[in-house]
Image 1 (cartoon, helix red, strand yellow):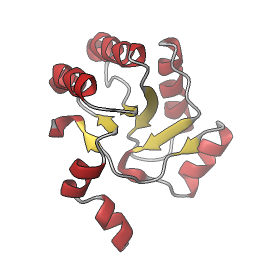
Image 2 (cartoon, helix red, strand yellow):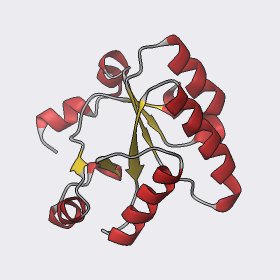
Image 3 (cartoon, helix red, strand yellow):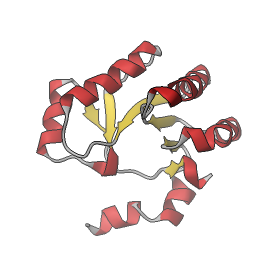
Length: 139
Protein backbone atom coordinates (compact mmCIF):
# COMPACT_ATOMS: atom_id res chain seq x y z
CA UNK A 1 0.00 0.00 0.00
CA UNK A 2 1.31 3.43 -0.91
CA UNK A 3 2.06 5.97 1.82
CA UNK A 4 -0.84 8.20 0.73
CA UNK A 5 -3.24 5.23 0.98
CA UNK A 6 -1.86 4.20 4.39
CA UNK A 7 -2.38 7.73 5.66
CA UNK A 8 -5.97 7.73 4.42
CA UNK A 9 -6.54 4.36 6.11
CA UNK A 10 -5.31 5.66 9.47
CA UNK A 11 -8.24 5.43 11.88
CA UNK A 12 -7.25 8.48 13.92
CA UNK A 13 -6.94 10.70 10.85
CA UNK A 14 -10.20 9.40 9.45
CA UNK A 15 -12.03 10.08 12.70
CA UNK A 16 -10.49 13.56 12.81
CA UNK A 17 -10.95 14.61 9.18
CA UNK A 18 -13.57 12.26 7.75
CA UNK A 19 -16.62 13.27 9.75
CA UNK A 20 -18.57 14.45 6.69
CA UNK A 21 -18.42 11.10 4.90
CA UNK A 22 -20.12 8.18 6.63
CA UNK A 23 -19.90 4.58 5.49
CA UNK A 24 -22.94 2.61 6.60
CA UNK A 25 -21.95 -1.04 6.81
CA UNK A 26 -24.07 -2.52 9.61
CA UNK A 27 -27.39 -0.66 9.96
CA UNK A 28 -28.87 -3.55 11.92
CA UNK A 29 -26.38 -2.71 14.71
CA UNK A 30 -25.99 1.06 14.29
CA UNK A 31 -29.36 2.41 13.13
CA UNK A 32 -29.98 4.79 16.03
CA UNK A 33 -26.32 5.84 16.30
CA UNK A 34 -26.25 6.70 12.60
CA UNK A 35 -29.29 8.97 12.85
CA UNK A 36 -28.02 10.61 16.05
CA UNK A 37 -24.65 11.23 14.41
CA UNK A 38 -26.22 12.68 11.26
CA UNK A 39 -28.50 14.94 13.31
CA UNK A 40 -25.58 16.30 15.36
CA UNK A 41 -22.84 16.60 12.70
CA UNK A 42 -22.41 18.05 9.24
CA UNK A 43 -22.58 14.82 7.27
CA UNK A 44 -22.58 15.52 3.54
CA UNK A 45 -22.71 12.00 2.12
CA UNK A 46 -23.41 8.44 3.18
CA UNK A 47 -22.02 5.41 1.42
CA UNK A 48 -24.68 2.75 1.89
CA UNK A 49 -24.57 -1.01 1.37
CA UNK A 50 -27.63 -2.82 0.03
CA UNK A 51 -29.43 -5.16 2.41
CA UNK A 52 -27.75 -8.57 2.59
CA UNK A 53 -31.07 -10.43 2.72
CA UNK A 54 -34.85 -9.97 2.62
CA UNK A 55 -35.08 -10.16 6.43
CA UNK A 56 -33.09 -6.93 6.83
CA UNK A 57 -34.42 -5.10 3.77
CA UNK A 58 -37.11 -3.20 5.70
CA UNK A 59 -34.65 -1.87 8.26
CA UNK A 60 -32.11 -0.76 5.64
CA UNK A 61 -34.84 0.82 3.52
CA UNK A 62 -36.27 2.75 6.47
CA UNK A 63 -32.83 4.10 7.44
CA UNK A 64 -31.92 5.12 3.90
CA UNK A 65 -35.23 6.93 3.41
CA UNK A 66 -34.65 8.80 6.68
CA UNK A 67 -31.18 9.80 5.48
CA UNK A 68 -32.59 10.88 2.11
CA UNK A 69 -35.22 13.02 3.86
CA UNK A 70 -32.37 14.83 5.63
CA UNK A 71 -31.09 15.78 2.15
CA UNK A 72 -27.81 13.91 2.53
CA UNK A 73 -26.27 12.46 -0.61
CA UNK A 74 -26.49 8.68 -0.69
CA UNK A 75 -23.92 6.80 -2.73
CA UNK A 76 -24.20 3.02 -3.21
CA UNK A 77 -21.41 0.98 -1.67
CA UNK A 78 -21.06 -2.67 -2.61
CA UNK A 79 -18.74 -5.46 -1.49
CA UNK A 80 -17.97 -7.99 -4.21
CA UNK A 81 -15.65 -10.98 -4.05
CA UNK A 82 -15.10 -10.54 -7.77
CA UNK A 83 -16.35 -8.09 -10.40
CA UNK A 84 -20.04 -8.71 -11.10
CA UNK A 85 -21.98 -6.27 -13.24
CA UNK A 86 -25.33 -7.91 -12.43
CA UNK A 87 -24.81 -7.36 -8.68
CA UNK A 88 -23.91 -3.71 -9.29
CA UNK A 89 -27.04 -3.28 -11.42
CA UNK A 90 -29.14 -4.95 -8.69
CA UNK A 91 -27.71 -2.57 -6.10
CA UNK A 92 -28.46 0.46 -8.27
CA UNK A 93 -31.99 -0.84 -8.84
CA UNK A 94 -32.58 -1.25 -5.09
CA UNK A 95 -31.60 2.38 -4.48
CA UNK A 96 -33.59 3.58 -7.50
CA UNK A 97 -36.70 1.97 -6.00
CA UNK A 98 -36.12 4.20 -2.95
CA UNK A 99 -35.92 7.28 -5.17
CA UNK A 100 -32.14 7.42 -4.84
CA UNK A 101 -30.33 7.65 -8.14
CA UNK A 102 -26.59 8.02 -8.09
CA UNK A 103 -24.00 8.19 -10.83
CA UNK A 104 -21.34 7.33 -8.27
CA UNK A 105 -20.30 4.10 -6.56
CA UNK A 106 -17.78 2.85 -4.05
CA UNK A 107 -16.60 -0.72 -4.32
CA UNK A 108 -15.74 -2.39 -1.03
CA UNK A 109 -12.10 -2.44 -0.03
CA UNK A 110 -11.52 0.46 -2.47
CA UNK A 111 -11.41 -1.90 -5.44
CA UNK A 112 -10.67 0.01 -8.59
CA UNK A 113 -8.87 -2.49 -10.81
CA UNK A 114 -9.64 -2.68 -14.52
CA UNK A 115 -12.62 -5.07 -14.26
CA UNK A 116 -14.29 -2.75 -11.73
CA UNK A 117 -13.51 0.28 -13.86
CA UNK A 118 -15.09 -1.44 -16.88
CA UNK A 119 -18.27 -2.18 -14.93
CA UNK A 120 -18.47 1.42 -13.76
CA UNK A 121 -17.86 2.71 -17.28
CA UNK A 122 -20.50 0.35 -18.76
CA UNK A 123 -23.06 1.65 -16.27
CA UNK A 124 -22.03 5.31 -16.50
CA UNK A 125 -20.77 5.41 -12.91
CA UNK A 126 -17.94 7.34 -11.31
CA UNK A 127 -15.87 5.31 -8.83
CA UNK A 128 -15.28 7.36 -5.69
CA UNK A 129 -11.60 7.56 -4.82
CA UNK A 130 -10.17 6.76 -1.39
CA UNK A 131 -10.77 9.68 0.98
CA UNK A 132 -11.15 10.42 4.68
CA UNK A 133 -14.31 8.91 6.14
CA UNK A 134 -15.76 7.22 9.18
CA UNK A 135 -17.68 3.97 9.59
CA UNK A 136 -20.99 3.49 11.37
CA UNK A 137 -19.43 0.85 13.64
CA UNK A 138 -16.96 3.49 14.93
CA UNK A 139 -19.80 5.61 16.34
